[in-house]
Length: 384
Image 1 (cartoon, one colour):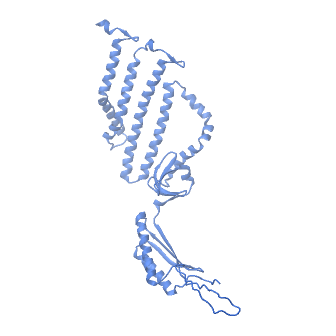
Image 2 (cartoon, helix red, strand yellow; image 1 turned 180 degrees about the horizontal axis):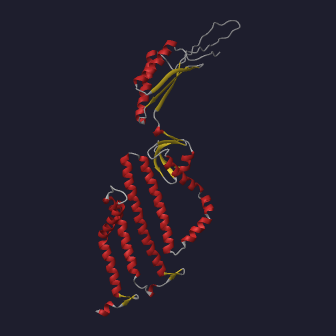
Image 3 (cartoon, helix red, strand yellow; image 1 turned 30 degrees about the vertical axis):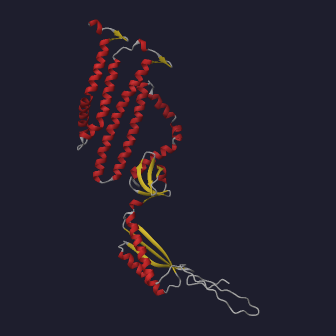
């Protein structure tokens, strides 16, 4: 029996394979319990930095990455104790099979570790988002999302450098030095991307707008849905999804409609020149009364000009920053009441009607029959 366990299989005793397999199975079976214990210790460490944290949320986020990292680490460490079998020793492009397997195992371990760090970043962002939501400032909420994505990018870059260093034996310091020498060329090639990245920081610190604001920029009107590292996503009034580079959002003229204090409504009336002065005065006074009854905050109605074809009456009013549907309701109500007032006073719009009359003069010795077109109240001049 002793000889059975000492049998050599692929350059290793059979008992070594049994021990490695038992160790891996033991970790797989107990990984959830062990992961919870490790997650609890990590939570107590993070809790010292801030109070009021939710342990269940933290555990649910990190228990998966911890378990995966634990199984990968124990498996690679246990298998590493075995001797590499000579039967499996071969080369691919002058790279030995042992180095290939070692690189793959290292990539898996680093990947599990990076996954755990990303989940911790998600948890911190979740806690900060809850605090921002409780404070009622969605600007802080968007800022948290932005820096969360930024930290994830940084962690991803660090993970790539770790893979290059530990898995492929690449001298990372020399790469960073060469990047310093080629920094000017890279900066020139990525000029627009760098400008958009800097513009994203300007947007978050200067805060000209935030997610949820209604903007008008570059003849585009819509609601900001997301502010990213490179661009801002806007849902337009036509429900299309527009991506605008952050550099344009900083350099261009952005009209933040959400921050306005009032909504403006206007009406331009061109009344017939045949309107009597008293009827014109009554119309303007009646419009002012209508605006007062509709509880607008500021309003004006006045005779702006007298042109060759109409009396020009300007009507301007401002409401509180209500929703678009509510503002359209006020505007429709004002327009209909003004229309009813004009009908009551017998006031017509210029060009609404034109009378054409044909007259015939008696023929004479040296005269032909002529027709005369006589304009109505809203037309001028004669046409022979």
